[in-house]
Image (cartoon, rainbow, N blue to C red; front, side, top):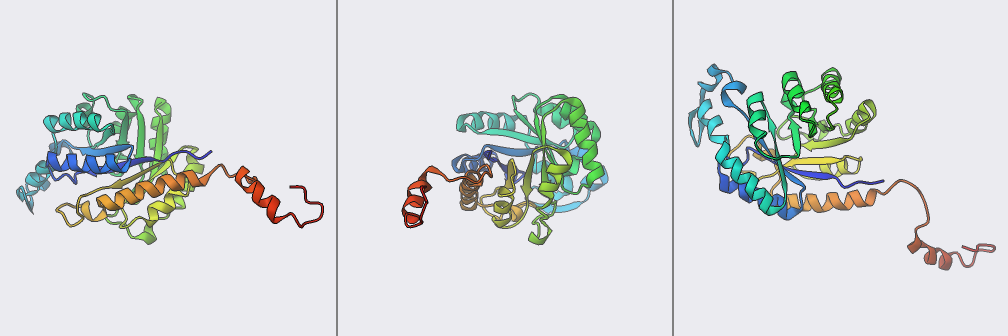
Length: 283
C-alpha cells in the first residue's frame, strides 16, 4: 500500500545565526504541511582543526573561519526557544549531530528522530552512540559507497535501532544528471529497508521523480531567499517552491496506489454505458 512521505524541511544553517530567521523558516515549513524541520549541531573545536579555524574567511561575523563557524552555531538558548516554538507550531524538530558532544547536547530535548549527515556516515563512534538511543534515524548516503553503507546498516541493525537510508548526492547544488535516482530501488533491494531522498538540486522536478519511486521520506533545504549569505542557500527551496513541493508530494503519494489493477467503483457505470453495444457483455 502507498504511504505518506515524511517531509523534512532542512533549515540546517540557513538561519545564519539569527533566531528570528529560524522561526520564519519554521513558519514556512509548518504552513506548507511539512512533518519536521531539521537543524545541524556542531562543536566547532571538535569538528574543525585549529589551523583551519585560524584561517582567513570574510563573513558577516568577522575575518576568520572560526568567527564564521561560531556565528552560524546555535547554543542552548536558541535551541530551547526552537523547541518551544516548534511545539507551539505543532511540528517536529530534530538535528544532525556532527560530534559526540553535540549528540549529548541534543539529549536534553525530547526529540523523536536522529539524522546521520552524509559526512558522518563513516564516523563509527557517532553511529554507535546514535544507534544506542534507538530513535528512528535517517541516514544520508552522500559521498558513500556500499562498503561504508554496509557498516552503518550493520551498526544500526545490531543495536536494534529503527532507521531508513536516504539516497543523497552531496554537491550544492547538485546537477540533475548526477541524481542517479535508480539508487533508491538499489538501496531498498540491497538493504531491505525503507529509503528516502535528500535532495540538493535546484528546482523541484527531481524531487517529484523521487516521490514517485516509493521513497518514505523527502528532505529539502529551505530558505527565505536563495541569494542570501550561506553555502547551502543555492541548493535550497524558497517558501513558494516549498509549498508547491509539499502539495505535489502529497498528491504523488496518494496517486501511487497499491499497484493492483482493478475496476474501481466509479468506472463501473462508465463501462456499462460505453460497452452496452457489445454482444454478451454484462458488465
